[in-house]
Image 1 (cartoon, rainbow, N blue to C red):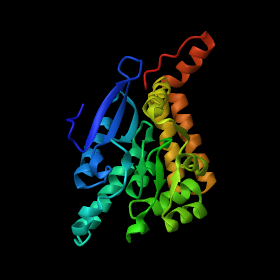
Image 2: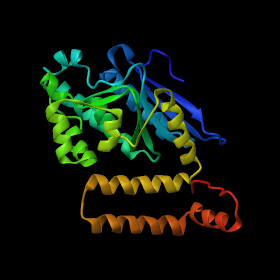
Image 3: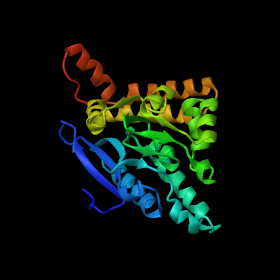
Length: 272
């Protein structure tokens, strides 16, 4: 457990199996609607370091404290930061690197969108594998509402998530989607009652923890690589075929899963 005033809280929740946990990363500047400044960004980077080094963590849940997931970059601090031609580009570069690490983790990263989500908050959601949204949440881009433009990934990732036309509407209008609209547009997989957001995330994490950690890691890497490269279908199919062969022919867990099926028992995966 992180100290309560840290800009990002890291909590571990046991998933019903010995040495299997979900790591809950909670953005923790509730009075500023979890606006992202350098301290929060670097705290998130350290939290990802902590998760990546712990093989007992089987899923990452990203959420916010208070009534916001994240309202995006800290505009009050941007007044100074955006005048610095060295520091501001470096901040945006670090934001890309830190958010992108969620896509490169060997475990699923799920956004639990608990409230107001805008600009950099939306970009953080887009770097997770998928999102669950609370019914009270609202999601938009909002950069142009304050004379800004997306730079943390929304202009690239949002069209891939919802299509170019819908992304253009959300970016140019500056409007916010309701939870049900976010699901309808494909930004979130489902909407749940506010008090069920974390329990739903933990339920998903428990199911993930029952799978082979090695199988999950391989599946995520191929899925993310093919999606991110956006290359020819043939290249994606070749990568999938090659990774499938290596995993199925060399791992402990693939034949163990088949043996367990044949013997009508629970598999004993080792993540190897």
